[in-house]
Amino acid sequence: MKIFIDTAKLGEIKEANSWGIVDGVTTNPSLIKKAVDSLEKKVSMENYIASICKEVDGPVSLEVKSQGAKEMIEEAKKLYNMFNHVNNNVVIKIPVNTAMQDDQENYEGIKAIKNLEEREIPTNATLVMSPNQAMLAAKAGAKYVSPFLGRIDDYIRVKMGLKPGRDFDKVSYFDEKLLEKIKHEKTKEIIREEIKEDIGRIYVNERLKAFSTDVKSGVDVVRKIKKIFENYKFETKIIAASIRNARQVMEVAETGADIATIPFDVIAQMIKHYKTQEGMKNFTKDIIPEYEVLFKK
Ligand code: E4P
Image 1 (spheres, protein in one colour):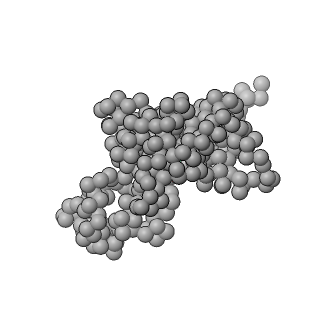
Image 2 (spheres, rainbow, N blue to C red):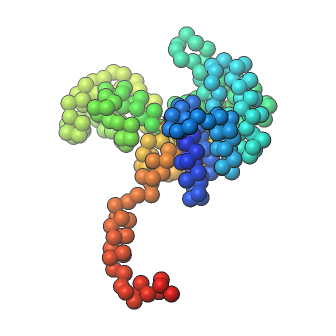
Image 3 (tube, protein in one colour):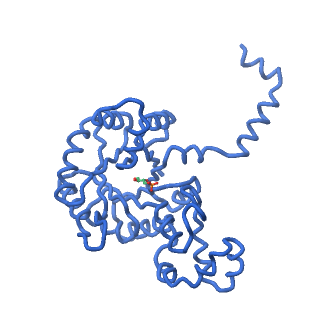
């Protein structure tokens, strides 16, 4: 599985890239904001993004800002012309659907993806929350689709009646098997033990019944997209995005996702292990003088 780094912080990109583990970068307007907020001095956005493109020899996703297809196509062309010459690695992120409410047009993202595909500008369909959205984006010619694992899990948890902040936080692991357990009356008591007072409400919640036929978790969305893409031989690559913890990385790697885009702190979680630390302490403690001498020569 390829690893992209999910950040616009140049320091993080450079650091992880120096370890030889970075195959690409994904940014979005929120990540750009975080990166700029963390800087001590004002920077030229153009120079800053050019530095990101230069740093990594792999795809760098840059997102458009409008909601209409026509505007997004113009923005995509601008970004592409401005930065692709730096390292020939720009990919344009287009939201799979830009509607912010029910009465808005739902097809602008797909239209823009199709148009950019014809212009040979590679796209990354972002904000993908379902296998169907991924399938449509792939049909329209997206080079990448980015299912948002963490946000899908958040959505399912909230539908289950769990409260962010009280029952889970941004980095909490979501156990998709929980939904299966909830379906069976017999296990109701066991789960009641696990998540206490919420389960009664969850179990009788009609909304959950409707939702449980959909997807089990963010990882499950990746699994389903993978299956669909294999069934129909789509060449579109899957980028597992909105990764919140190391366990999710392992699970998407098991699904066969092409790429995971991972925040810097989650990469740090991936490399840490209590037993590795313990092993290090013991090896260091056991170094005998005779062995030490070898390093003094
Ligand atoms: C990357 O392509 C996405 O924009 C990013 O992973 C979103 O992550 P978040 O849901 O943690 O904001």
